[in-house]
Amino acid sequence: MILMKFISFTAMSSNSLDRKVNDFLESHSGIEVIDIKFTASFGSVYIAIL
Image (cartoon, rainbow, N blue to C red; front, side, top):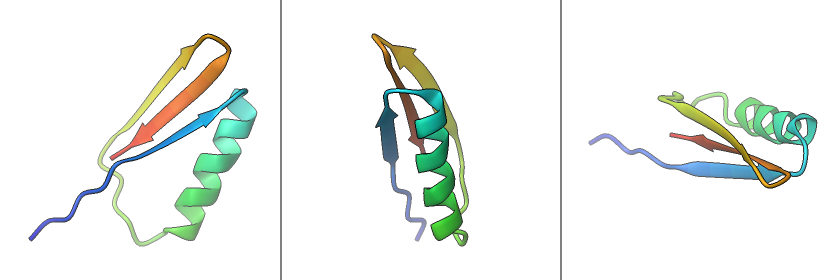
């Protein structure tokens, strides 16, 4: 059985978003990242990880 989870991050700046995503990936080093999507809109930046 394959288990997939989706997680998203939002921040006001790309530096803050980078920090959040990197902290998450470092603390969950055993996961396999399938895809990362990045978008910016209305003064916020977003990343979604599958």
